[in-house]
Image (tube, rainbow, N blue to C red):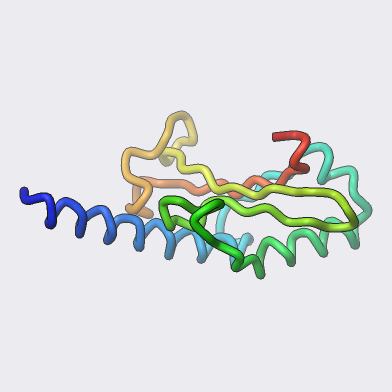
Length: 118
């Protein structure tokens, strides 16, 4: 495989991962979402506002998304910093996914947390 082919394959894989990550982030009911105790402790309306901020997040840049996979973000809400991230597991959620670009072998988990819980 030439270097150009390998780079093209990496770009295609990143594009596939990004598309799948965006789909989960924009429609969290399509997958698994985990919230940490700090997020769980928020009043319902603040928790809902945070979830809506994650759903609408689009501030991706080289600093927070170096691989262009849209798998992490930071949000400020009521002077508190929150992070969200997407992890890739195998179908049984026992190990990491063998191929995060393949939805048939990957379960995505979106975690929303206070930054100080990271």
